[in-house]
Length: 236
Figure 1 (cartoon, rainbow, N blue to C red):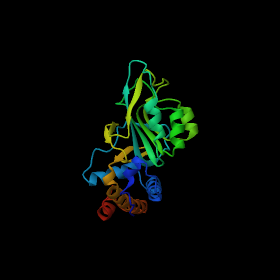
Figure 2: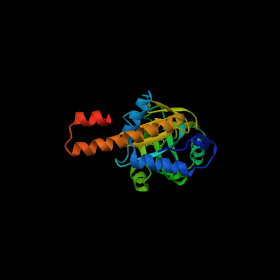
Figure 3: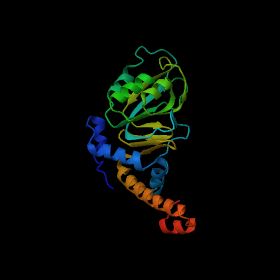
Figure 4: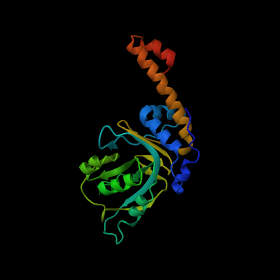
């Protein structure tokens, strides 16, 4: 299976989502998963694209794929006179098919993500958010149905504790450097960020491995020995 993703990073400059994007996201969410994508990247010699295990979904059933729209935050220890300007600008810039990747440096001072940002992101067509800091308004986010991965939960506002300093720039989130337009895939096992130029090969390898895993599973259920099936399909 092949997807044309050559121009997807241009969407960070305002290009609308294409039908091929939705086909790609749907294929990933229905047929692939972060573990097999990690294996595909390993096969490509790329071993550093899985975010830290401390980033967990608010609900175990959350699965999403989309292009990265990055947001960079920093801690504050005073009340800034314009606390929300760049935050608002960043959210209003979100394009359909994107995933908010909010980098806080792992800060635990505040919860920069909550119900209203989730609502704004969903309204702009975002597919989810990854926050390497804390979130709040969790029950309202769950009711809204917007997928969020986070390092934890805390009820405090960002005003006077943190601020958005830039967006749509390379950031480090969960120990992985993410650039705008990278492919973000998240499920209960974790989060994978695939560099834009590596997406096609990673999807191809992962799809092939899933097909071999399915055949392996079927034969194991029929009583075949693991060694024989491994020798046939080469997957575990």
